[in-house]
Image (tube, helix red, strand yellow):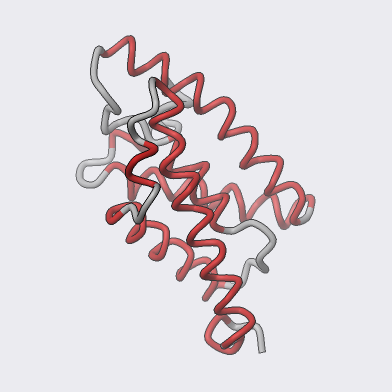
Length: 151
């Protein structure tokens, strides 16, 4: 339950997914500062794999499909968003908002991935959205680096 609810952030008063994205942002930032960019990948993999298990267990325990308080998927997705990017303040801010917007709209095929069973369905759409956001940020970094504090 602790992992699935993002250390309790899934109990946020409004928009638990937004609250749940904050630990992903903080963890990615901390891992990158502590051990480098590859550590962020390791953290994202940990939360993706452990999240499938934890989210599936909590979904079964509560008897609800994709319970709102389960936000480990946002943690993993936010970390994927930040993979191999420098942790400048503009990138962190844009990454947070870009991930949240894409998570709400879930462009194809992210929405379809929610249909996967159990924890896989809970996690897969956010990991796909994180990949989309990551690719957009890498494109922005190449096209307009000054917008992201890189120039």
